[in-house]
Amino acid sequence: MIEFRQVTKRYDSDHTALRQVNFGLERGELAFLTGHSGAGKSTLLKLIMVMERPSAGEVVVGGQVLNRLPRRQIPYIRRHIGVVFQNHQLLFDRTVFDNVAMPLEVMGASPRDTGRRVRAALDKVGLLQKEKMNPMQLSGGEQQRVGIARAVVNKPPVLLADEPTGNLDPALSADIMNLFGQFSQVGVTVLIATHDIALINEMGRRTLKLDHGRLVTGGTSVIGGGASGR
Amino acid sequence: MAADTRKKSQPARGANKARSPWREQAESYFTHHRKVAEDSARRLWRNPVASLMTWTVMGVALALPVALLLLLTSLQGVSAGWESSARVTAYIELDVPLERARVLSNEIAGDGRVASVELVDRDQALSEFRASSGLEDALDYLEDNPLPHTLLITPEEGARSTEGVEGLVRFVEGMEGVERVQVDLGWLQRLNAMTDLLARAVWALAILLAAAVVLVIGNTVRLSIESRRDEILVAKLVGGTDSFVRRPFLYTGAWFGLGGGIVALILLQLSLWWLSGPIERLAGLYRSDFSLDGLQFDGALALIIVAMLLGWLGAWVAVKRHLDDMEPGDIAGGR
Image (cartoon, rainbow over all chains, first blue to last red; front, top):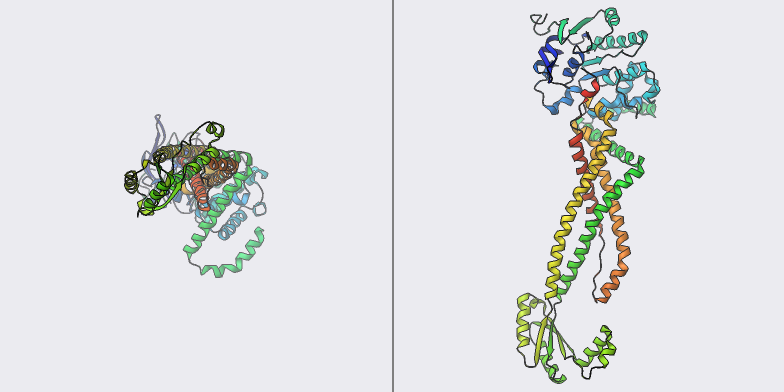
């Protein structure tokens, strides 16, 4: 579903964020992305979302090579990738329902469809009763769950999360991780960037570890059959 | 409300399945447009003072060239009216008696190129002059009537071209007893030249003010883009296309245009009403049927459409400059 082939990302000022990263994630796989701060976790996620382009190598998502993707096509790729942020990026000028409905709105879904799918997503994260509230009225954990509902409302095949539990206590974090686990069980490829070693150990899933832009563990390639990047 | 729409949609689903998907797509596309248009309008209403100020600026900038254009059209109407009723005035020699003047008058009236001839005898001319000039007392000092008999010749429709009138003038000049023939078209040509010049000046002004309108709207929309930055970034993040993100701002520009157009219409109507009295008096003094015409329905409609297009264009400039560069990478945090 996601594949990095010899990906290098250099920012102009001699700063190399990623060096020849190789890895692949299968459909329905859940993996953690870890490493010290500044190791290149966010850059890696941004490359998948086409917020950045690699300096060298290829990023493939859903069989599509993103390097050569024309600018106009980027929105259509993003519709297949759900993202959850640490600071959840909710809009406080609208209700929970309208926040979650945004990915459907940009796709031009009919209001009937939108209502059905938004409620399904809110139900999944256990916030169906709060659809008419402003996200400001919700607790941190609830806000994060609204963010997750927004990320999965259009059933994307890929779900990315950048420090999704950064501000939450362990019990809430476990809850959120549980949710991610459920998504991967229905075939969503989930990649979670986190510092939370305890959580990673608890889940016992594949872990990609970055160190100064190099992938030091977990870098098995799917398509290459393990021949590269071990 | 949310709960009962859900209930209603359940049984309807089977029936809706039959509709072709493109129709449903088109429908939700138009629904979306309507929603965005309404939302943009509501946002303007929510800041009535700021919106009204922008509308007024735009209204003034639009009303000014339109008012000048209207004035110009009225002036051109006047000169066109006079051209078609170009009259040739023949002054008879002072010592020619009235009877001879009558004969001349009949002779000219018999010519094919002449529609009608009016004989103004010298006494009549003097009393008219006395009445209109206000020089009554001065005229009393004159021993003799200094005015000659005058023939006012109106050419036939077909002879109103420059050559036709010239031919007629030569014919009348050749007659015995006619001292001088005057075709008062010189001032008309000067008026025409002036209105041509004025027309260019007005168009130049109109273009400058239209550019100003575009910039004003562009700047206003830029502010609105800044204030909705988070929303734009999230929309781009979840896969909103450029045109999706632009749409609300383009509608905002068009609504600014609509408001500006309406303000311009009101300003025009007010100034017309305010000017109509003096203009009527002035035209009366010149014995002209000149009147300053307001905008007709189609003109008003055109004004509003042009205003909306200008607003849209202004928004488009702002959107092009400030929106397309916005990348959601900024909110994804540090590297």
